[in-house]
Length: 260
Image 1 (spheres, rainbow, N blue to C red):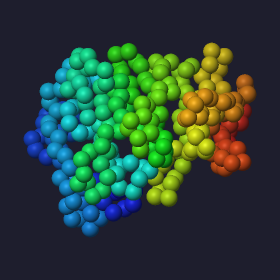
Image 2 (cartoon, rainbow, N blue to C red):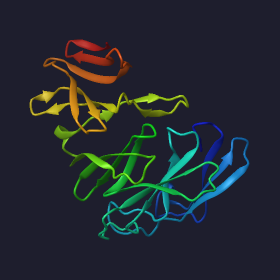
Image 3 (tube, rainbow, N blue to C red):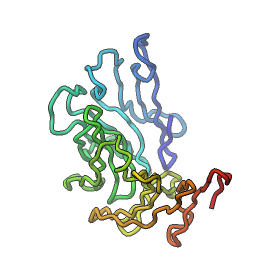
Image 4 (cartoon, helix red, strand yellow):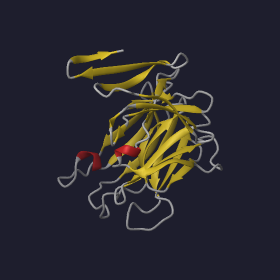
């Protein structure tokens, strides 16, 4: 059960028969309905099937709607993913998944937002102009991060990261989030820029970093790199992004972990 960001609707997933002893519960048949906050049915949104006979392969998935959730940056907009390869990784297709959305009161036709080359992993919502999309493919260990415009599906998404996700040295870091006026986590965006906190693994040791990534030009600027050789530093979050204040934790073999 999850409330829409504006608190007016409830998304309710209910497991339904037939049950199974072959797969875990999250692969059982389920219905997904939308209700008002006082329990009145708005729409029977989706009915998924029991997934006992998926195609072979780690990247196999179901057909139809999956990963149904609320957009964090809008009051009451559902988004979800649908496989374009029949859920079968053996099928060669230019795009594996497509992301759709539907705004309240959920009576219009779904709107396609974008497509992914690999299998969909997740979205970091930002604002009406920017969102980050992640996909990956187990067979090649490839991961891509795209920036796309959720308000204009005629604009092609841009790939900002294309890497082997097991290569820690090339890890771009995690985008920093903030709570919006609906108390949901969205990207911190300052004049087309987002901020990445990285673990900073290198052949010479671990040196956490902060990068500024311009989503318009896809250029990066290194704002900070830890210089400790005898201590471990963990970057946590911004305290005040305008002042450049960051919450960090530092420890060493002779110092207990402390926050600074």
